[in-house]
Length: 283
Image 1 (cartoon, rainbow, N blue to C red):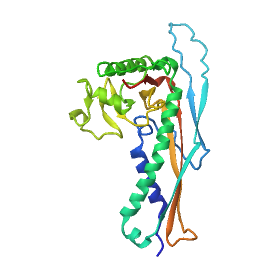
Image 2 (cartoon, rainbow, N blue to C red; image 1 turned 120 degrees about the vertical axis):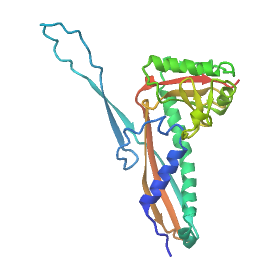
Image 3 (cartoon, rainbow, N blue to C red; image 1 turned 180 degrees about the vertical axis):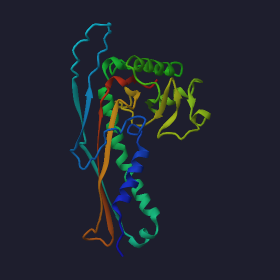
Image 4 (cartoon, rainbow, N blue to C red; image 1 turned 180 degrees about the horizontal axis):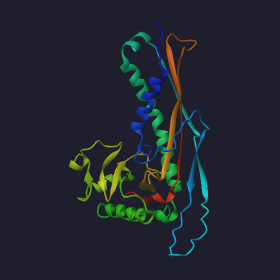
């Protein structure tokens, strides 16, 4: 008996698992506003923006100025990354009767597919942070301690304030060692407290200095140094992904069924000023 296969069901399972695994790519860190209909790698999403509107003084019984001509600009979110999975199920009858086998296979596929997109998004964010929004540098990285780690978060928040970043929904993604420093500061609100009773996002470990603090092992770094601790708001970065194909087939030299799928994605920072970064070494 061959494996009865419903592609749309499997694809949905995989996308859910991916979304639940991402730290940098999850909602709250990136937005999905321009995901649109992605059919294949190489597709692009056009994002238009309008320039600022001038406001002038009005004087009674005086003609107003000619209408301002607004300029628009366009950025392209290119879906240029692609990964695939391809696995074989030998005991077909047992797999059909026990859906947990299929779910576990999809979870494993999602775990493997998740890590590269997360690192990719982190790299895209790091490259887009303006020089004026950085604290420390790769030449002279900061060395936070338990006494000033929280203060660096306050400084990141100030940078975002100066760039009109919304207060609600700010995030900061830190490596495990920086989280350890925050745990030694009473101003850090840990998850599991009454404040953290709500459903937590992936990697969320608490709140500090107006940020949702997320912990990740994918924080960009150079050989365990010069960690790029990124703070910001989801309005800054857009991420789009899609499972464009999931199908079953019969390997020529095996008895059973195999499943393969293609995952495409892309990310772009559209509002660079709404990201800030601390470049730091572990003390």
